[in-house]
Image (cartoon, rainbow, N blue to C red; front, side, top):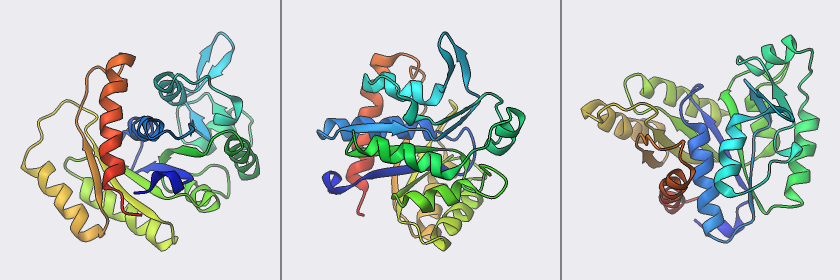
Length: 238
């Protein structure tokens, strides 16, 4: 893939907790190694954590620390405290999530960075408010989609349904990345799931990221995820 001509990616997932932040960090590190001015963006963070300067987005903090970037408000325009669906978390906090505000923050970031890696919240059809879903945001941004999925039992159905939704929306699919978020052996089911998703989904499998217990050690995580990101970029054909 000619990464120099790409405006970036939107990293979504089949569910919550499937490794979207890991894939976002890997892609950002790989783009940085290619000499791109890259920034992550987490439009909506549910489960924001209280810090000395107010709420902080843990997903964004993880990626910016690996990139040696200082978080900016436009990297995460909505920080929602309750760890639930964005529409519910926003409602409980008396906040209205609005697509124009997210798109404005995106354009502000684009003025400073050539490549943006945008990480969604939850899955594709998660509501942002009473009328918009994460899919609506993806369609508004128009970035190539990287779908993150679990490799284990149950992944075929979840992943193929997610792919069908993205394809029906006319979005550009870069491919699927499988992420082991728990330390379990990779057996015959995980190996065949990868083949089945590729065959029936008719999309590339961009990579398989194994479980890595030192993700909380920045120096180790930086090296590991940079290598994973390089492999993902090399597998892209869009």
